[in-house]
Image: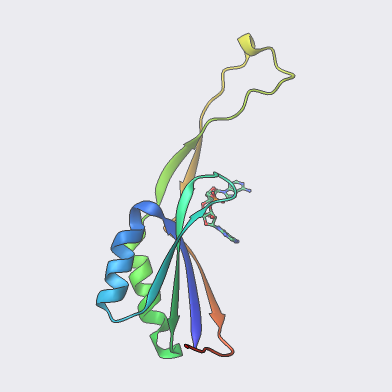
Length: 109
Ligand code: 2BA
């Protein structure tokens, strides 16, 4: 069995959860925060038999889209602010960051 951990953008999480459950997969959605942007994102945990991994990955690919985010740089304290015009930095975020992990044992009580 494998555990698929997918970190996705919040905007994509509902559609992905719906697609996974409609395809018969069990999924858990957790609200998370990205360490770099400090923005809310979403993490889905899906436990599947090994032969279901590719189907889950395909659903992640289909439902998670790349988006552009703009990051406003902080004015350095050493710069005189009248000479420093901060330009937003463009970042490509997502579609999804996915980890596929071997599950040694699973129990349900
Ligand atoms: P964040 O850490 O908030 O990162 C958001 C986006 O910022 C990243 O998008 C990437 O485009 C950029 N970024 C991150 N760290 C950077 C850095 N040191 N320098 C320049 N740009 C940087 P994604 O790569 O699509 O990642 C989206 C989210 O997935 C991340 O949100 C984080 O929550 C998670 N993630 C990505 N890689 C991970 C990893 N190796 N381990 C754990 N979580 C990860």
